[in-house]
Amino acid sequence: MPIKPENVKRYPPRKEWLVIRKRILERAGYCCEGSPAFPDCRKRNGDYIDPLSTSFARVVLTIAHLDHTPENCDDENLRAWCQRCHLTYDAKHHAQNAYATRRGRKADGDLFA
Image 1: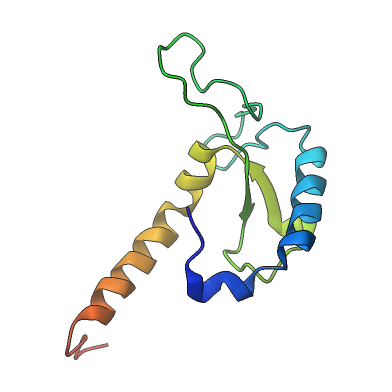
Image 2 (image 1 turned 135 degrees about the vertical axis):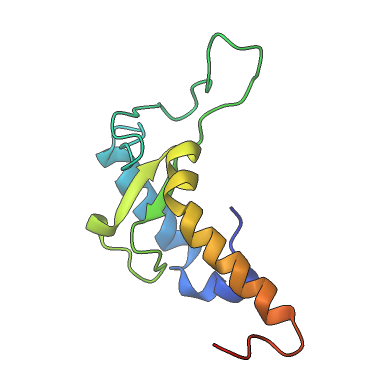
């Protein structure tokens, strides 16, 4: 998922992020480290998602912040995850953000909040 422009400054500078990303991917052996929903997932970066399918979708490992805080780049807070693991883990967080965004667009907002 792309980083919203207002959140870009919350992440380390690109050069620093590339070093962090490489370190986490190397730690994971360039395989998904498995999420709570899919603990045994070990998809390899660049492999086809389903080698038997006619789809040509490839696995792209992402770096997930377990606490959803981009400023916290401690190795213990970061995981190398495939798209499925990352999006499943973040689904509730994304839903909460989407709700807040939609609510914020309303003129009066929530009178009972």
